[in-house]
Image 1: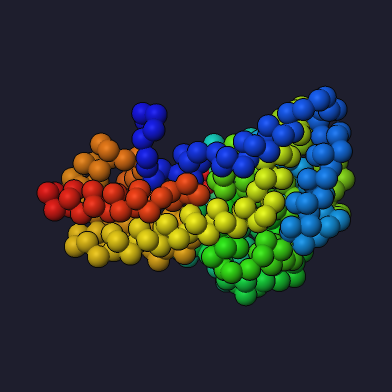
Image 2: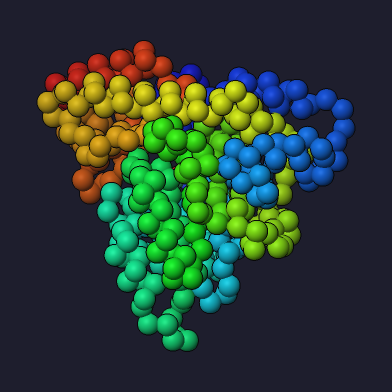
Length: 345
Ligand SMILES: Cc1ncc(COP(=O)(O)O)c(C=O)c1O
């Protein structure tokens, strides 16, 4: 990738929002105790907890989303327990087995439709035989918005929580794109995490430089979290600069502005490329991702100019991801390039 090249590879390919950089610069004054033992970090932890609607929740800033997910599993599971995840879960597909290697937690794949766990599949796993030879499901981890750019409705989310809790399981939400989900659902962050026990709350894809938070909403899971975060190698020494990133995104609801914009750019892209003969939108775009198939020659030609992922090698499906800094001009230029590439394919 050359510097300055625009693309649709991921929302982490985007720039850092200037307000985040300003916030880091504002925090860059004087000395402060490390490891989160400073009043500023404590105040931002309070802001995060309040934003998720549980002021007494405990908040642990970490470096990345995989770390947040694995730390969450470590906090929630006993050694004989596993985590039910969808077959598309980042935990399953993109964390190199870290849940197993680092958390010692086997992942149990639940039936998945459109990137979402089905209730029937969940019930089957929960009710499966439970003798000492099998891993016992201890938690359901779902992703909102999902890896396929789909959304659990609030009712679907509530049903997953109900089935999990009724079966004695906890619920973790991988919210790497929690902001996009809330924006698309037209609700606050608190509504999207209602009933959940702990959340990986993403900031990086929403305009931060590199920061996520594990938010423990269920007080029974708080014990040992500080130690676990350190043991999972996710304890920042200069913590105030992580806190500053969340501070910026929560101020003036910048998280919502950024997520709403990213989602709107995906809608614009879907509308533009959906009209091109030869391009098929493979999933209904609900948040900031557009999935499509197009002739292989067109895909190869486009990749010479724009970054994006070939999502599924077997079908040739591609993913075009929009971010807080995607512009209307980016979309229009790219849609024109898609049209030209398909025409000449
Ligand atoms: C759904 C989901 N969860 C978690 C992550 C976190 O990844 P990382 O460890 O790269 O911050 C990602 C990043 O792509 C993601 O898409």
